[in-house]
Image (cartoon, rainbow, N blue to C red; front, side, top):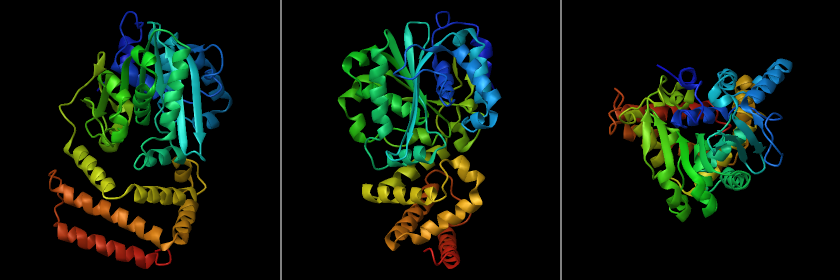
Length: 396
């Protein structure tokens, strides 16, 4: 099963003028956006840019000087190898990188990163990074459940306007996960002159929007230029409202791990397509949408704030830090839960309980019913709740 590394072996010796930009190039650059390019690629207010080949050389030098620090900011272990493969290729090596931004603001609850790349075919590809491992990044994602617009989307629209003013020719946009969402939002909310320059918008397993966003005039103007892809077991890519067509991709992994672009199967200049998403994917999608729809925006907001207050009590800034120090973190989080008011504790129990019951109710509809009767599952849930309350009665 071929992946993006195989594609670089097949097509890496061809420039974009010899072999036009295609969806595989889009997922490669969407994955590339997760690399920490701070101090290497010039920012939006800096002059000039840097070739991808030179950027990789500088990255390798930084890695050699401080390997542990740089690797702590690398999300995917394959990324340094991808960087090297891109740099050594004819296709990407001389591409011009500029406009790199990487902001994380806890007070505004936003995580935003993007860069631009001139492809050498009279076009500029604007790439938005998806959610990283930071707690603030995931908090912003959860905020989508009750906010019509999140700060990163506003930043994405402003970023596109600025970068468009610095370039000529056609524009492509794209990203993975939240990055694809930002690409669509930015395209929907830029001025009409810049909208006309946009030729393609790549959404790779990205969540949708609230109805107010996709019912707007701006979205209607760019909808037909969206190229959306989701894996067979997609979860992220089916969240919220989506009113565009998508192609289903085969993956070498299972379940949620199919979200990783390295697992997407490649054939020549495109992905390997499947007929439809899996029953499990549809089951999870319907369950989450019913679960979220069972509560008011206020309840969703209070639940999200309570959940992340508990997580932040660990003092960790990312899920990576949380995993490394899980034992002391767990103690701090349990204490914070215990200090919460009774209304918040009740809401947490109620929301998690509804999720459990909604999942059970949908299992039969999707042919995923467990072998034990529903009554037994509900009795097991009640038993578990009693056991948890007895063990942590001071906190509940």
